Structures are given as C-alpha cells and as structure tokens.
Length: 172
Image 1 (cartoon, one colour):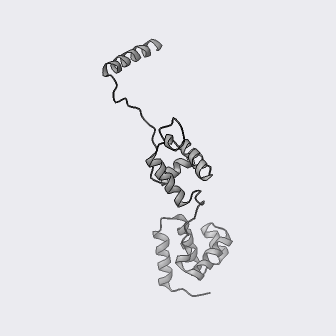
Image 2 (spheres, rainbow, N blue to C red; image 1 turned 60 degrees about the vertical axis):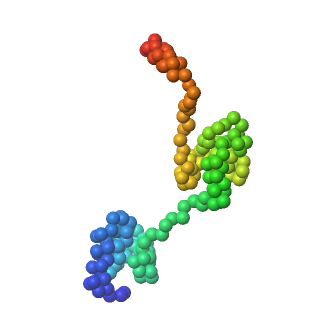
Image 3 (spheres, rainbow, N blue to C red; image 1 turned 30 degrees about the vertical axis):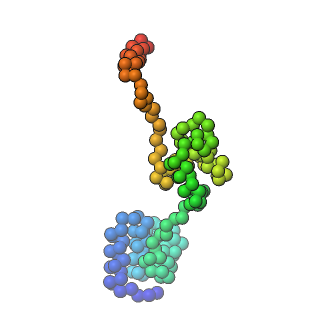
C-alpha cells in the first residue's frame, strides 16, 4: 500500500468537505479513509456503501486519480430524428401551415399534427408529449391559437356579452 503524505490526505479531506454532491462526498470520504489505512470492508461500513463499491472507488482512484472519480455525462437515449430531419421539421413548421403540407382545412400546427407529418415524411412515430419535447429542444414555442375577429362589429360583440351574461344568470 502506498503511503500518502499528510498534505495529500488534507487535500482529499478539503474536497470531501467542499463538494455539494453527495455522491462525490461519499467517493472522496472513501478515498480519505483508504489514505488513512482503512480496509475496503471498514470503509464500506463507515461510509455506508457496499464493499465492492468501496473497492471500485479505491481502484479507480489508484488508476486514474481524482479525475477518474468524476462521473461521466450519461449519453441518454439516442434521438429519433437526424439533424437534417429536425431542420426540415423546423423549417416546415415555422414557414408553412399544415394546410400547405397536406392536412386539408388545418391552419395551426399542433403536436398531434406534427406527429402525423413526421410519421408521413420520415416513418418515425412520436407521441404528442414526445413531439412537444422536440418542439422545446428546437426552440419552437407551443401555444394554443386564439381567434380574434379583426373586422368584428363592436356593437354586436357588446350585445353578445350582455346576452351571455343574462343567460348565465338564468342558469344559476
């Protein structure tokens, strides 16, 4: 077993005290205890981990140093569309209406309509939630359309509101 200097042990203790990550705190503490001469079994008991895990931490530290203890970024699930397909989707949604790409009578993009277009164009199925996640990743805002009648008669609108309020009172 290698003999560690008091400075090396102090540096590891400092890392253990200053990190906010509980996982890294556990790893640093395990290495501190190893540096102080504890066995892997005793380290596991003190830290509250499996003996095999304690051994992995110690062996990783011996082989790769502190950098070996830092967890790698998880790759996650692979994307379902290629970069080119995502660009085509972005351009289509931002520059065309569903009516222009074959969805007759539909003027606003919804997640469900976009799912249908992606399935038709690329043969890839998405759920509505998955499509909304893709919208978010592509910086496309997802909002519900509101309808405003630009040439509506204000007097007719006012009359409608009055009639509607009267109707609400009769149902209460």
